[in-house]
Every structure is written in C-alpha cells, then in structure tokens.
Length: 419
Length: 94
Image 1 (spheres, rainbow over the protein chains, first blue to last red):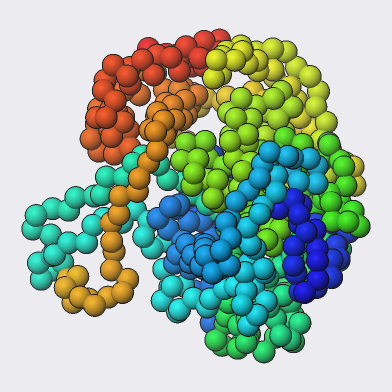
Image 2 (image 1 turned 90 degrees about the horizontal axis):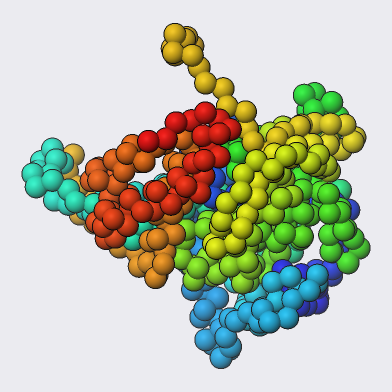
C-alpha cells in the first residue's frame, strides 16, 4: 500500500497505487434541491449505452429515493455496515474533526477508517458482490405501500393504508464518481481498470477484463456491473466521446454527458477542472465547478469517508434531517445548506448556469444588474439583483447568457392549446 | 395473481416509518410553500394542498401543526416573495 493525500478527508491515507493525478478531472455538481426524480437522465444513459443483450439490469445512471430506495438494494447501508464492523473490530471511531479547516482540508479531518484501511488483508478495499435479485428492481422500496392480504385476484377487500412517513425524502442522482482513488482500479487483479490522464475518466479495458468481478465487489458505490453475455464488467464511460469534443454538435469543444444534457429539472452542471501535480484543483475562481465546490463549498462529495475521493458533488437538500445528510455528505452539510438557502449575489448568478447549454462551461463572467428584491432570510437581510451571467466554452467563446430573473412568457387565452 | 402466491418472495414490499428530527417538519413545510409561492400560486389555492388529505405530505403538516400555523406560513412566505412577484412578473396573489 502507498500513502496518498485525500483532500476530502484532510489527511493522507493508504491506497494500492502511488499518488498520480490527471491533467484535468471530469466533475459534476448535482443540485438535489431541484431534482424531481423523473429519471430522464436514467433513460438517456440507457438508450445511449446499455440497451444490448446482457445489459438489461444495468443502469449506469440511476436516481434513487432516499432513504427508502437504493440500486443495487441497500448498497450504501451494506457498505456503511461493513465499515462499522471494521471500526468495531479495530476499536476505532469514525469521527470527523471539523474544528480546523483550510484549503487542503476544507471539511476538516476524518479520523476513521476508509474502505482501503478497513480491510483484513484479503481485499484491497472492503466490499461485497450484490446478488442478482438486488440489481433487478432499481426503484424498489420507493413509494411502496404496506403489504396486504388480497383476495384471489390480488385485490384488497379492506383497502390499503400507506405508511405515514415523517415528511421527508429526496432524490439521489447516481453514476460512477470517476474517483481520484478508484476502488475498482485498486481491486482489479488484471489491471484492466484505468484512469485517463487527460480527463480523469475511469474506464474498464474490455480486452484485459476477464470478468472476475473484483471491481463489482470493491467499488463502494456499486457502479461497476457484470455482463453475463460478454463475461466482462462494464461501467459508466462518462460519455467520453462527448467530453473529448468529438461530437459534431459541439464544434470541437467538450460537451456535457448525455445524463447531464437531458435534465429537465436543470439540476446538473458538468465540467472539467485543471488538476495540479499534487492533486489539488488549480485555483480558478471563475470556473463554475471551482466556485461551487472549492470557494462557496455548497457542493459536497457523496460518502467522502469511503476514501475514494469521488468527483461528483451534491448540493444537499435543505429539508432533510441533518444527521442523515452528515453521514452521507460529511461535516460540510450545515454550512452548505446555509449558503444555498441565502445565496450570495455571485452564487445566485452561477446557479442559473445549470443545464443551459450542452457545452461544458470553463469560465463565467457576471454583468451587474439592478436590485430587484429585498427580503429577509433566516432573520438576515437579503438582496436579489438581476445580474447577467455569461458562460464560456473551452475555446473561450460565449456559450450561454442568462439573467437571474427568468423571463416569463404567458400563453394568451385564445392560444392556450395550440401545440 | 395474489400476493399470497409469493409467500416466500424475498422481494416482498415492506413499509417502514422513518424517524424525523426536531425542526425538520417545519423546514419541509417552508420549502413546499416557498416553491409554490414562487411558482405564482396564491394563498387560497395553496391552502387547498394542505386541507386535502389526498396530498399526503402537506396534509400531514396540516394535521400536525394546525390551520393557523399553515395560514401564517403561507402569509409570511407570500410577504417574503409575493411583492416582488407581483411587481416584476404580474402574477396575481389573493
């Protein structure tokens, strides 16, 4: 095992390979607060990549309703349980020390074990292989009623009562995190999994893969999947032809992936960030990803305690229990929600950029507009300005221009149904 | 086909009640009301979401917190966003 630095944990940790970083890193920010769970992303990914024989139960992108749903079933609960057991065996606590934070440790320091450090020596990272049945129903346990005894036609004679939940749930959008320290790559005995130096996308080389399923076992996010018809494992490829700028639509500049580009709720923003030799992000305050993740810190990694340094970031839902969110996104949750609920003038403008162009945005500028609204949020005065935000593509060309106040177009009564 | 035919089905649906935490119901209520007010819904229309038991989430808030709480929350949220919406976008409020 080598020693590598994980900035999300604020400390060095054990990993199979020596520390090495790509020039750029594929990243995304998902705003959970906006997601309506329509699964359009899921369908777009399915229709693009996993529509063939042997891929029927394979959903590289899925949206699950937390806390009830998960694909494969209970994946996160099972990994958290394995991690808990390892902590108990080693008499350690999985705690965060968030008292000291800086640029190299923005969420403080994680004092517990990662999935790489919790192993008993037989694996490179703790994990399990889900059973076939756990992959079969990607939305199972979501919005389900109590089971009941029906008559011979299956119809209840008594009527069915739904369980009364406390009023909260949220949608969690999931795909491969294209981790900085991928557990799938650490697991593979054939070294068939690799991280591309140009954009940090993690891929499986089908020519090297022999289908041992170690990546399926040790990816904590369960985003490597086995395909019986080819006897190889497959995973999200981050729509790399689009990211490379090879799609004719993009005029040679990187484009957002299919799942990002179709989002009707405008919850997703996809980009490439420059990575320094030490793995830190090159300071670029006018890059939307850098601004959201590093500067405003409103977008947080999913289960950072796993230790893989995932590169998909989430703006946590402001209505869900903080203890649950803290477990899922780490100690940055409270501050992130506070900043999101009362956004700064610049943040409000940058939030408009989500899902407004298929081209990846590499830089933004803001043209100041007039004050349009003053109110109070959480007892503090808050102003809203109708600024204009402009996004630029990889070649520095203007890709999109939006105002904070969205124009409202009302269809006249005489043409209400003219579609 | 009846569920009884799958008596040993490992995928049988099980309904569970998830625990909440103090202040979370209020946060949820605030988010819901704010969302609809910013969409341009007026107070009487918004109240129907709470009094109608078919809308489980809002009805639960109505049941637990009472009508006075819901009315005050709607009024407060309309005051927070309503003036701006009226002036800028011409959306009418009741």
